[in-house]
Image (spheres, one colour):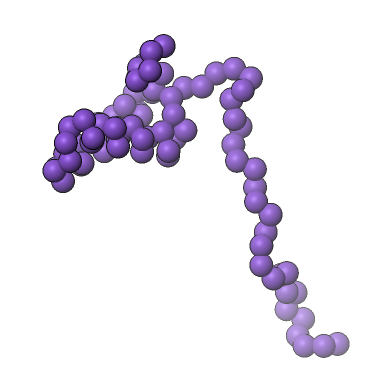
Length: 78
């Protein structure tokens, strides 16, 4: 698949990119730059086109909870 080929994207992703591109064009961004930004947005929000194979990521691991420990609400001192 040559670089820039959009065949790996779903129809939904293609429609989303078209909509984003139209918004950029309305704001006066050039056609080429609007297309570039639209696909960059789709890649960022959805992780690119269809994926297959064992290297496919399952998702992000949960980050550990940060901040003070949860209080039980039993009042001050015992």
